[in-house]
Image (cartoon, rainbow, N blue to C red):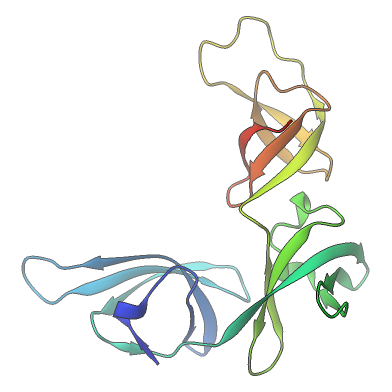
Length: 187
């Protein structure tokens, strides 16, 4: 059990008999009335995000989860195959548990969350940024850089993202995994 004072990003709660991870929280102390905590929680199974308000000091049930490093091997008819970096055991996750599959390439390091009591894999998470090579994009027009204009590009995994006009084919770029946004060019 934990109270609202223990809330932090990444804390996993057992809320309405389902596991939710806190993505955002804010302690609010209005001038009139009791304090409360606003949260945004993502359901681990469905991926849906819900907003919830907890009264300050209320007890909530936490779930024990373990993060284990894995390496993405390949995709087949059963799902996505990962290998544990320490024990070399393989884990197969269905597509629903891999929310970023379109920017994940073979050999990519990921973190898989496991429920500690049942040893059941819950979800896979990429690092905050990934480096990919642009395989196709339209050429940028010369002199069209007065504004922060973006153009569509296809990366080596087949995902389509928006990049600045100066990015060309065969350019290695860094992508933020949370919203698929361009960060910078990589040398």
